[in-house]
Image 1 (cartoon, rainbow, N blue to C red):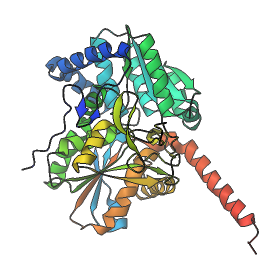
Image 2 (image 1 turned 180 degrees about the vertical axis):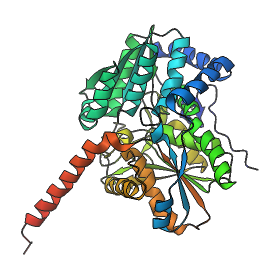
Image 3 (image 1 turned 90 degrees about the horizontal axis):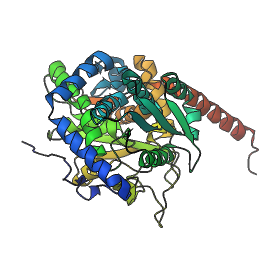
Image 4 (image 1 turned 60 degrees about the vertical axis):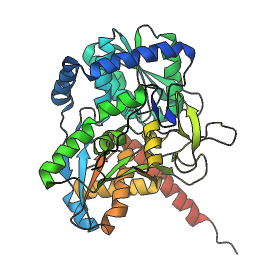
Length: 413
């Protein structure tokens, strides 16, 4: 029997990772948040309210869908999709936003702030804030606002104020920095809903716990459908909330292999990708110690991914710990492979996944043909791809333009 566990110590450390690396003004609020969260973890009233809302409002449990045509096309392992794209708002993000807004309400907070990259966390936070009548401000990089215009519109229609961030690379890292500045200024009445399993303690633990509903459901569902556990779990990894949510309830099962898929972008050089385990090193970013993409002088590197939600320079500290322990393997998937996988799943199953989720789908396409037909893969379809239609159209035009230029160039004598 495998007794593997992964829990932080009292200071929020997963081995050498994690912790609370923040300005002094935030130490006491984070300690208060930790104490409040520890109370509700064991509070039957809180957990019951959350459970009812997850069912009646979010639409849980989400289905575990057998991808029959995909399985037949690849000719190997049976492939199941955990359909987080069917959640209200279209992604797994609402699991965490709902849990945190209930906690904020219990703590007496009247104002909610958040950051967002792909926009799904922003939409989820705007949604639950509207549900409880709370003021909501969402910070979003200007570049991400342009490529995720649909979600910007959705947030504003839900009553949230969306603040464009024009500093730095104008993507997720910069949005987090602005949200943290806001929190420092308005700590008395404001709760910051971080959207992924990163940041200072207790956020990596808290977000993981709220997202673990994914893995708990998947475990129960696969036992009902197949009478046994899966052989392989696959999920994309940005900060890592959808992945740790799927993986965590299976960590103690030695027979279940797990793979997290990072954004391989356009290449292997710094600035061309967002694969922290492929070129990253130990560092501290936005409250936590983990693997970070940085140069030799510790300056945070530019990152790139076709998917806005994976375009971040650091990975959640629990993922770093799980990699060190050898419990989870991590790989990467490039932009083109992810776009191709999105198209393939759309044609095979009539499911248009988010570009983030497509990175996980791409890895399943790689490995399924080499597995036995009685083996089982579960891929976390963490979100739907409606939000990415504009970016996909732009991607296709760039590829067409590049192809046209290459064709027009004269041959080298």
